[in-house]
Amino acid sequence: MIREVLRMGDPRLLRRAAPVEVFATRELAALIQDMRDTMAHLNGAGLAAPQIGVDLRVVIFGGGANPRYPDASSVPDTVLINPVLTPLSDDEEGGWEGCLSVPGLRGWVSRWTDLHYAGFDEQGQAFARRATGFHARVVQHECDHLDGVLYPMRVRDFSRFGYTEVLFPDGVVVADD
Ligand code: NI
Image 1 (tube, rainbow, N blue to C red):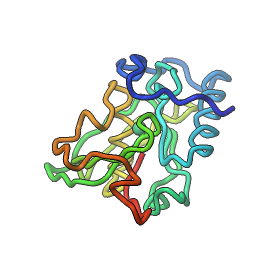
Image 2 (image 1 turned 90 degrees about the vertical axis):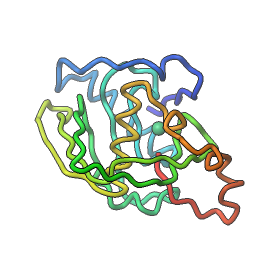
Image 3 (image 1 turned 45 degrees about the horizontal axis):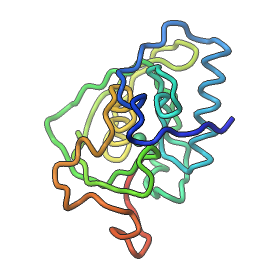
Image 4 (image 1 turned 120 degrees about the vertical axis):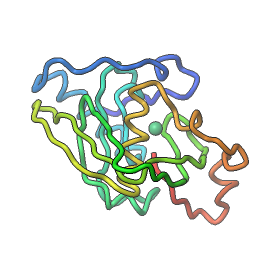
């Protein structure tokens, strides 16, 4: 079921979400299905449970070809629960980001370029991966939502924060959600 995505200004986006304690439940499966439906409907590259008002540490990302984000095909289709992120170097790089909770805008955000992430799938199976580049950016953006952080809070240079159609009048956007 497609759910309403909360927009910036809603206090529910600012909470530190609670860990999932019980896996492989119908409720968790229904939540993830709703998140997939909502992300696909909006052509998002990722979505966090708090964005649909659910206060749990669940994110999804990937989903293959995405007209909004040509780089998204490099990101595996993933359900990540109770994530732990660890940078593998101090290197950061800037990139344009957008967010389904901040519609119509893009901002330039610095992120770790190389990281390790660990967590659980919906069955409670632990897994871990290394991520670089756009994949690493998406993971950091989505996991920020679990700590009540929206990407505009990470914009350092507000001359590179604005409306997508003004920043990119030719329609070419390289960014992530
Ligand atoms: Ni977002």
